[in-house]
Image (cartoon, rainbow over all chains, first blue to last red):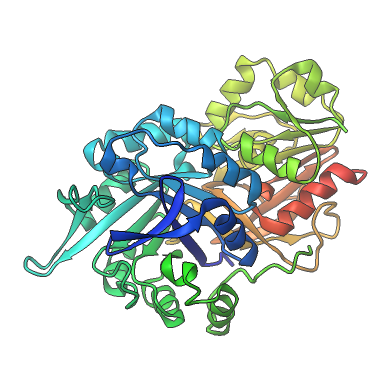
Length: 263
Length: 196
């Protein structure tokens, strides 16, 4: 049975792992490589490296850490942040990244999604969506440039429409970052994720809000997402991977057990 | 031991190379017919589309040399699908090393691509995986090979499909051993070190 994926997310800034609250006020967590290796060893199913400065700064960032990560770990990983061109995507894949996640550049140039899919295949192309619930309008809005507070702004898209658009353009997976929940550890936005799930024909990954083991249980059982992404609960050892996976297994959720190092 | 990774110009060449290096070997990525032919083990990696990969092999004039290989050869993901006779993806003739067909997966209302870790059930004739553990392996694909006489491992997603196939010296794996943790590591080690 296809297992639900537990995906630690490492926000990268200037080659270091950082973590902010609601995309702001970033604090230093540590070096990339030891963290990546540790997560692979303790049973993470996949990793996402999110270069949060790249899109908003408009600069080309040193990505040599991608190859160092690929040399060391034997689980899949995605690189996100500031991927604007086919050449840049090709370079990251050739360094050993398994998937590319595109967010703001896809909003600026949706055709980039088609080009990436044609060039690298659907399986490589993940679309990250920062979705903000506007309590005044009652709408879910897609935001862009969220890596930098001063540049973060709403796009023209409502979340459901953008999901449909990127799927039509060939996206292979969607990571839905629910901004209102991000970093505050009060639980995933199960309602929004369940609503998006109903018309999302590609794998859907929940992001934003994980704070306790039952948040994972809820998002898998109630929103039927394919994976759940989390950062601070893992970085700060609030949740132990072994305990999380065992409890999800006990709840009857399909989960890859932690390997014992034997076939 | 000479290990060659065929340069299909597909995206996962590097991760396959690193996985072999982690086992203590120095693989060569090449499209040189002579070097491929002289290898002890050949790996045919691949992601992307069957039509694009076959075009690359055609342009590099590697189709006949690959067909002529007699040493153990492992096709990974699209590399396995290229070993079959035909792929629906782009309606393309493949290498025909194993008389099987690659078709679009029929998964009902489940998401496609089939992406993530799924149980692999090996037959007792499988030389690379144990048949009593049903280990989780990492898959990313939307096309698959139907289960048939050449199947040496199966997987279920909507329908049962071939997770591994074999004919003579040619072995294919639909999942990515280079990204399948300890299970994949052990499988690649057996491919390199066991008599096959």
